[in-house]
Amino acid sequence: MITSLFFSTTASTVELVYPNPDIAPDEVIAIQLNGLQHNDSPESDTGILQTWAFAHPRNRIMTGPLKRFTTMLKGPDYVVMLDHTSHEIVPVNSGDGWRQFNVFMETENGKVMQFAWIVEKVTEGRYKNCWMTVAVSAPRLTGRGS
Image (cartoon, rainbow, N blue to C red; front, side, top):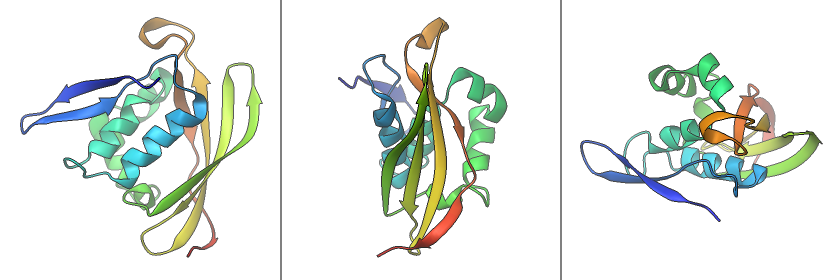
């Protein structure tokens, strides 16, 4: 079950999905990737905001606040995530309370990039028992897409 809440902006209301213990680890990544794939829909940087919603509290300390996180995603390493054409999520490793996936992403210009994406179950506080992203590697070119 995915729970939707609303985030108010000055222009209109944007529907976002927020962490919930019922959301599986791969679903967390799919929610983030779908947001990034359609970053400016329905409003500018909605996808980045959706991705930030699932950033683990520990990750937020390293990459935040939101303005800094947005700058990082629009920077040279991660801009390929924005408006990508397709993605695939492949489980590769797991342990007690964490899961690692390889994410293969085809960019707008047809390159296929690979990311290591790690999610962890939050153990305390507001997001207790929710899966959230703790790390995403820099992209690695794996070839050309379709």
